[in-house]
Length: 541
Image (tube, helix red, strand yellow):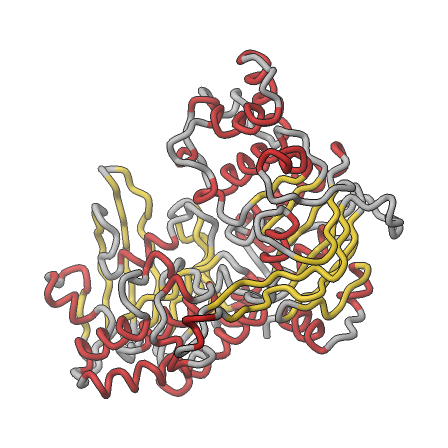
């Protein structure tokens, strides 16, 4: 492959003598977009990061040939650390999956981009700052001058990912390693980022090696696909070949993992007396500092949710869809009584009082399952302690034996048993996969037998096959336990699989609402039409 920008031969990666990547061969030509696809644990991220020896304590063997700007070829695995540092960020740059951990929390995002420009391009401080602002603007981030002076925690998830992309592009690399760059982004933002990368590739002749489990992204973005399973490269070809005529059973399983709808249909609109959850003109306001002397005497306000009205009856799922910053997660927090709100909010016929003691009965009615179970589950508590914690609060009369049996029963409900996992109750969250941790989070919410589950992006961080399993679990639990779901998501496919009714939020307002098929199949509002169009999957050419 003399014309390849990157050629990998016989790559093997081991940890402590155990091999996890087994003789991978692949190549990327100049200006090409190659997607490396597989589930968590397939070895795709370890493979990509090992090319630059970015995986600590890994033993890497094989050859990784990179074509230089002058046509010379170097084996990256034979370079010393000093020579490899010159390659990183300039010839090859990386966009990491989680920008909140990849960005330094102590420096503004502008300063972090400036640092790359000064080290790799030798620009002056003033010139580097102007260039950093321009790079942020190129990624489509709003108010780039102001965002450049913001710290990572002051940006939304999508804005942080754009800042990470701007930093990766600062060195003008010829090859970009993008590790799940759009996983946490809204559907419209994903399209924008992919269009951005397409434009940059055309203008700079840059190649992209995309690591992903998002098959929608692969269809829309890639030229070729390489599929990994358990550290082996099992299939490779063009997008049309792999998606149109998959040869390996694992590839077929990935392609067939689109969420399936299996809910009780024919649920009619409820009356006010039947509603488990009802809001009218709900409003959530956050105080913000005002500039200048005015801020000394009076704070400003940011309206996160304005005049939101919704109804949710038992056994129904209400899907709330919108982009980052639309107010959908704030709406969920208000429903859970975790942020103050005004207007009418009735949950099981009662309202939040703002007192821990007075609100305790409602805490049992409504439970929540968060997006990332790894951060929502305490790493210092065992499974038995995590799942049984709610019983100590809401059913203190239960003795230790009864509490343990309830924990076992609830874990079995979500598909986790001690037959599968010996010593299950004594294990810790880090001993489980992402999908298994999400099952633990669901069990933790179910243990107190709630009537409403607030699902905040419950599958957005999961592989497609695991996402399908978790959604099937939620559908079964709804049928068996009569649960109502308030489903917060930006994934239109998840809404189609789960929701009976939908509300669409934009800039804190409900811009459209109705039954799922009405809203998604015949959207009236231009914003809804844009969301649905962005989620559609083009046929590979």
